[in-house]
Image (tube, rainbow, N blue to C red; front, side, top):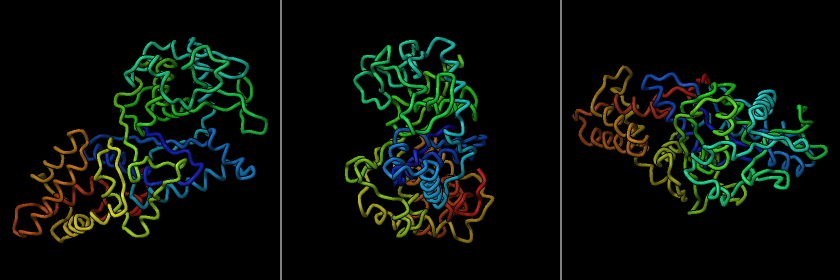
Amino acid sequence: MYVCGVTPYDVTHLGHAFSYVQFDALRRYLLSQGYAVKYVQNVTDIDDDMIMVSKRQGGRPIPEIRDENDAIFRNDLDRLNVLRPSAYPFATGHIPEIIETTAKLIECGHAYVVDGDVFFEAESFARYGRLNGVSLAELGKLENPESKRAHKKRGPLDFLLWQQVDPGDPSWESPWGPGRPGWSIECTAMSVRHLGQQIDIHGGGHDLIYPHHENEIAQAECAYGVEPFCGWWLHNGMLQLDGVKMSKSLGNLVLARNLMATYEPDHLRLYLLSNHLRSDANYHEGDLDALVGRYARLKNVSTREDAGPGVADGPVLRAFRDAMDADFDAPRALDVLDEAAHRLQSAPGHATSAAEIRAALATLGFAFAGARGPATGDLTP
């Protein structure tokens, strides 16, 4: 699994927690089904935003900004018991791989150099637009943060692989002169470096489908001649606040760490997993309070004396797996577990197994159910 990580130019918010808790639960479920999972999550530590914030803060070093915000972000995810990645690559640590991939694309005729800038030629890749399921003309109408330096490009959808920089901006030597990477080439280079030329699952927010993920496919398949680059693309929804997308630019942020000052981290995990991975969840103040009863019920059942390890398969676990296998329906899986917990509490002699409920909740990453992870002292991937 490769999951697009954050650009740590500022604080992270509840929307980031939603994404990484969802992919953590997916990773854990795959592990529970016997798969060996290698999970890579990157850090985009050089881009326009990082440079802009550095300048705004009087030339503060970008690594300093990155490390400060990344430490806060990691602490939030640790408290939410998100498993550490198998690899956590920084874009700036993979400049040689980025240059190598860019050179391959030039060599095979999919990229071109204009006065120190290197562009990918979108129309040279016949399958460009396939992930979005639209034509090149339709793609041209979409918002495109990678549409830069139009006066140099052969085509409107072409995008930068390597770019010249303004005097004083961070730069690295390359065959095309000093500069820095484009956005999408970073993820292609890091993915190939850590997972090979093909991957099973690629995750990220649905706001990355175009242009970022479309570009990743084009770069990887053209540079390495292997199709498909990725078997399954999974895109999480955008967390909204009272119906408006939560974003740094709008300033309407709810911070996970602030909520965890009032609610237990597992309570917040329960809220996040109560929304489907692809849903544009709409957060309102009081949403966590509405889950107090369910949270207490699941936690109490999981800590009963008869909820020990070594559970055999049973009807609750089978129903749980059925829900998870049906489009990774974690909200329905939680309904199954809550219904079973309610039956057990209302009828103590019921055949429902507390151990089954605990095992399923551990699979979803709840620390109170004994799930391994940072919240229970396990920092291994």
